[in-house]
Image (cartoon, rainbow over all chains, first blue to last red; front, side):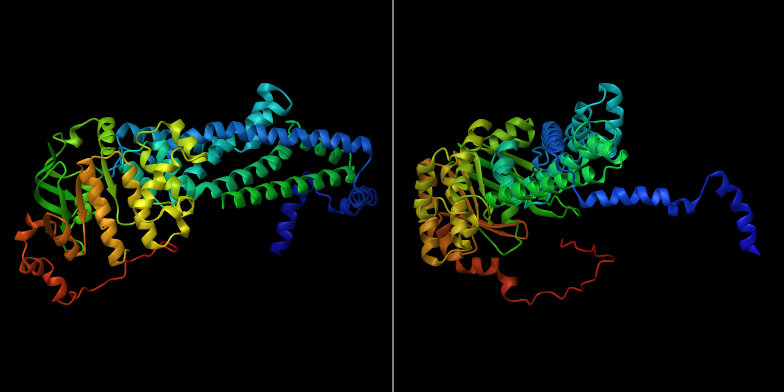
Amino acid sequence: MAALIGLAVLWPALVFSEFKPWILFDLQSLGAAGRFLAGFLQPAHSAEFLAMVLRETWQTVAIATAGLTLALLGAIPATLIVTERLSISRLGTGRMRAGAALLRQAVRWLLVLLRSVPELVWALLLVRVVGLGPTAGVLAIALTYSGMLGKVYAEILESSDAHATEVLLANGSGRLAALLYGALPESASELVSYTVYRWECAIRGSAVMGFVGAGGLGQRMDESTRMMAGGEVCTMLIVFVLLVAAADLVSTLLRRRLG
Amino acid sequence: MTTYRLDQLTVRHLAAGKAPALHAIDLVVEAGEQLAIIGPSGAGKTTLLATLACAHKPAAGGFAAFGIDPWALPEDARHALRARLFLAPQTPPLPPRQRVVTAVLAARLPQWSLRQALASLLKPSDPDAAFDALARFGLGDKLYARVDRLSGGERQRCGLARLLLSSAEVFLVDEPLSALDPTLAQITLSTLQQEAAARKAALVCSLHQVDMARAHFPRIVGLRDGRIVFDLPRDQVSDAMIAALYQNEADAPAPAVHHEAPEQLAVGACF
């Protein structure tokens, strides 16, 4: 009885929302989906297409790298300000000067603000401001990632052993010098590994942002998907896998070097 | 010139609770003077050294280093003063993944500009000085080794080699011999004392080896429960005084303390 009443209420809603599940099994749509999926078995590899993919890949890598570099320009100074361990006023008293504490908190909030807006939203906003193309992608990555990098860098530095840094500060060295000689040897490989991982994320992120017109491989992938060209999408996905694998390799090499 | 003048100085722990670690300490250290601080564990030796290094702010009383109260100075001036005091903590403050040469040259950081500090990370700026300092502690061959390849005793001496490269006028050394065998302890202590004498720097050294303290230091300060029990030239320190200083530690069994589990233990936390 209840089921009948439920159905009676639901029925107009289903009709109104044009919910027609049988379309899934319509011959025409099955055929289209089948062709799209079958296309995946034969990655597109015409010379012209590959040249285009290469060009767009280069643009994607460039967007990710430029975005991350800009993000570092913001994140490194923010890290130096936020890291409480590098406070000289804290030394001996256990508490920071009011002005310094306020500045730290303000930068912390700025970092929260930067990373709480998803890069896709930054990209949508920036596409309105600077127009379609890679500039929007670069700026979107720079904004979000400086928030993430600043926070995680500070946390990596604070979770390493404090003793070396504290003694250097107690013996009169400057904040930056104490960071370089006290905290960095412990944290360097973790910092590098996180940075390379973020570069990898930036490559993926730039693909997603391509869908909203921020250029690069993502934009081409959007076009190919709309044209139901499965082979082309497949080729581009393979390129992404290769890029991530390359980032992994770079990370391993750097970490081994820093040992 | 008087290096330190402590007048009824009280120092509290920085952590919660704020229990006093040192009660109304009176101490005067002249330039070039060498004194040993002895006393049972938990007497406040480390806190005293940290206070002398301006790394711990006293709660009450008078404190003057080189005739000035560091805590009345603006922060920059106080930090500049810290470069004239060298604190060598008991645990060597050396990052495990650093090379010994870099760790030792870190003593020069207060004098270096940031650019020099960076350059020295890539190419050690004065490896000869680092080698000489290490060689005086018998560690010349370890110049380019990584700190985590050193044994405990080697690390301790490596931390002290840093002291030789600093430009400090006061050496505050916390139990420099705790990881060393008797022979090495002898050599290490005499190296410290020679360097202090050569620079006319004051040497304040906390020690657990009472015999070493009485044999090598002209002045002995006995510290117990945050109070100075005696402060005398070594020939006036009697065995009875030493026994009294360490008394309870040897005789009384550890007092029965009921332990209670805290209401919540954070998962994964080890502190």
